Length: 116
Image (tube, rainbow, N blue to C red; front, side):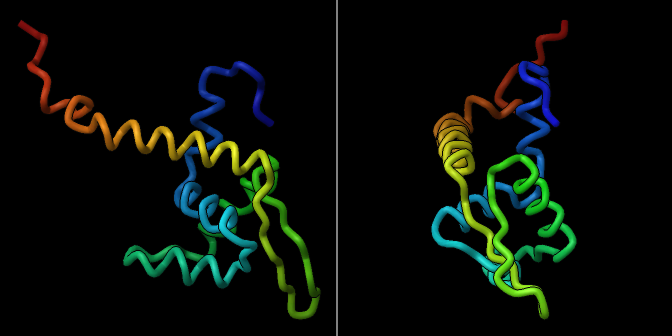
């Protein structure tokens, strides 16, 4: 559980590999685990099922994604975005645009060493 105003709460919430990509995918349409594996893995870098599962569990625990079980045997789960997840996605995309716009200014190599 994240504590309100905890200094690093925001970072802890979003510091998961594939989080942004998963939020984007489920905001577009509800997704099954295997569909997410295929979609995320198509970018060239593999996503491992365990990593995807852990990130989905994290997103569900925090109310950013919901999991609907549509069949038990074999288990089929469909992940849906929540309004909270869409709001976070919008914030992360705004941060992404900020970094894209200011990447040269943010690059530490562009700064002179302040030490004497």
